[in-house]
Image 1 (spheres, rainbow, N blue to C red):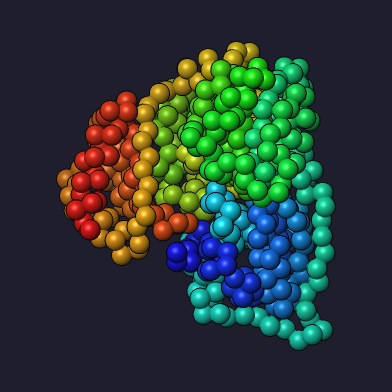
Image 2: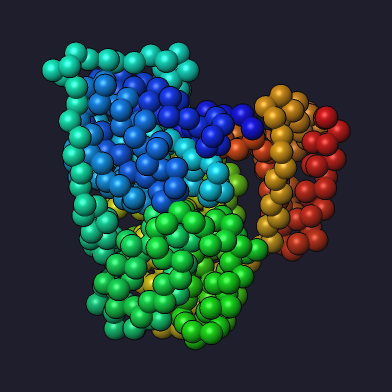
Length: 449
């Protein structure tokens, strides 16, 4: 497996491509980029985390950076602490939803968000060229720790919702943290909101209790627990807790796409204005914006948190996110945040006074089909070129791979920023129509070799 190096960061396999030497090189390159400023470092719960973090921290210290080590915390918690500590940037040791053999290095700028493409490309160039900022012994950076980062994050989230209204409902919640980094903060938040919490897979051991990506097939256990516990809602975090999937009171998996749709519906009602989402996100939010009327509108970006944030800032969007369960609320932090998504969902339920299944039933409903398959960079390039040529007469966007829009639905085909795979996503009125669109595009992709 090749090392994945992109504007989204660096990911590799432990014992193969992700090594202590590579981690130190990445830390030293980041030290040069921030000119030796203060840097916040957090990590998810993977057993390889201390090794990778130690390498990164060594490179930062050697470059004159004062490092604040947060230990095991969620990615959005690290982002919160970048601002709290007035840091020059942050680094998160995480491979997000990838299986345990993977680990990665994600960079945050001084605003606490993933750097825009141009900024990220400069940093990646420094890493590839092994440029570093090595200082004399008297200028080596200092290392300190901060143990209450979770509390700082939770307080910010609580400021965005009506805590009393949610507490009055006394919701029973099942939280599946997959033994990742978000468990402690997630349980604290829900308890502060007056919820009766059934916490499964809550210890941040990094021994993932199931395949960590919060998709339907991986959350069968959570759905069963919902029925057993007679809970009002189930939440599933991914290992670094920037994504959230939701299960309703019947034990039915609602899905990641609905996480942003529920948050958008709430924002269009309470703080009308624009929101931003990537090209692969369901058009549910577009329909909700049309229902709400001016000034509610959806702006689209390329896939990737940094791209969504860039559009959010340009359009002064009140909310942003991606259809993978990522919700970005700038009142908390410009990073996808499962804690924010949980709080907003509970407030929607409290305001509606009805079961989550009924709330979801009132949302626009489309069928989305997602496929992914191994694919190297050269094959991805050939496939995208072939798709663009084959559908040149249709309405297409090439800001990120190729998206084709037809009256009956859309297809988005692109190479992943974080894995050596190609993704093909289609949305239409029903599964049959979505699969027909997928087949139409896959025929071109597969013929490209």
